[in-house]
Length: 238
Image (tube, rainbow, N blue to C red):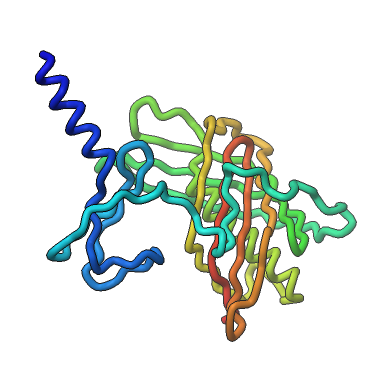
């Protein structure tokens, strides 16, 4: 028994100390020739398994979002949750549905629809009021907000804010004016959001800065009840 415990401790300690890393992989988070596969390992360590010949062994720090890319970590309090005066916002009664459908197990679909009622739009802030409907074919799956549905809806909210910021003629049935590409997403769901009527999704535009040729980097934060997301990415005109 003592020998077996010693072997287990040795294996555990070795697994926590080392990470297999391809010698051709870069430290900038960008895939290079010979770079392998990323996965989340023991105790939150970032593991990178290399498929390249001749790999080195080293310990890596816990994965974080680089501050230089404008990501605001949910571990830290954001600058503010101030809301603009209603007189500074544009009110839009724009009923529409935002729907997400997927399946985890074959033949057992899960679907959620946000039935949006209205928006309050500012250049740095958007507020949406909606009801939601939920269906699941899986066992023990009560009605709850699917964060992916909120993430899809956030893209529209950011689109509206950017149109307001840049004086673009936003029309729900008009041509697309901007493309929005998320590149980093951080999600925190301390508890399920189970309400189905008169929910509120708020979005704060934390940063918009031009990087080149009309392309802008953005950081936006959204909240629905206890669900929080911080998204950074790139937007450019069409």
